[in-house]
Image 1 (cartoon, helix red, strand yellow):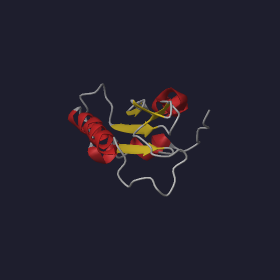
Image 2 (cartoon, rainbow, N blue to C red; image 1 turned 180 degrees about the vertical axis):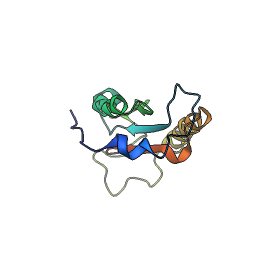
Image 3 (spheres, rainbow, N blue to C red; image 1 turned 90 degrees about the vertical axis):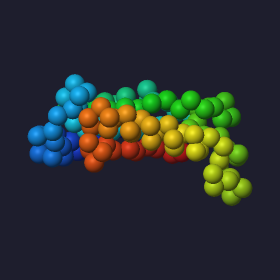
Length: 124
C-alpha cells in the first residue's frame, strides 16, 4: 500500500474554484493518477482520501490495458528492467498518450477546468 499525505487539499482548491460550476455533480477539479508497471489502479485507492476530504475533487486511478512480461503496463517494454536499448518511443506509447489526452478532454468537456486537473503517476 502507498501512504497518504497530510497536504491541505481543501485549502489548495477552496478559493480557486469557489465560483465555478461543473456539469459533473459539482466536481471542480480532478486528479488522474497512473500506476506503475506491474501495479493496478485499485492499489492506489488510498488517494481517494483527497475526494473524501474535498468532494469537489474527482480522483481517478485507471488500470493499464496493456500487458508486458505478464504484468500490467501502460506500453510495451523491450527489456525489464528498462535498459539502454529501450527505444525512446516504445510500442503503444503513442496510443496511451492519445487515450490519456482523451480522458483529460472528457474531464474538460464535463466542466472541469483544464487548470484544475492534475495528472500524475508512479514508475512508468
